Image (cartoon, rainbow, N blue to C red; front, side, top):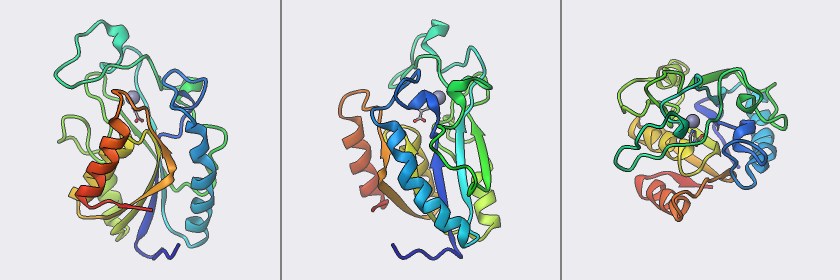
Length: 199
Ligand code: VGL
Ligand code: ZN
């Protein structure tokens, strides 16, 4: 793969224990994204290019947890308790090499607001600061992988397109929840239609 490291960043989305087999919100084969991400991250690091790892980072009792007893809004999905700050489930999967990572970004830490995207929270207005960070480094192209294809990877990719980054999705470095059934296929075709380049 020919990469312009001067203008590119690698985004490793939510490669955390709770999204891997045995975790609270396990994604099938979620742990398999680590190896391809590591290979690419080492190439970015060797070139001095930014590698950002995001961490879903919820306080206990977070609004996205079904355990709150809250009714889900229209089209909203509530989840089992997952990625609670400071727990083993919130830790990065041990297979993810953190040495090449230049920035760890926590998201979803506000009690009453969730954040699927690495760029904007689910109110679609509150910035995480990632766009400003990347613009500050003169990055115009992002390579994306991680978990989950149909949620955090999807929303991150769509926001990156809206922010006018060139966006490459690392097809072998993503896995999905696929809830509701068919959501992975739907997410992949929506990303392609929006201009995300599948690698
Ligand atoms: C995610 C559901 C809830 C994800 C995070 O990382 O895709 N999905 N929180
Ligand atoms: Zn979450």
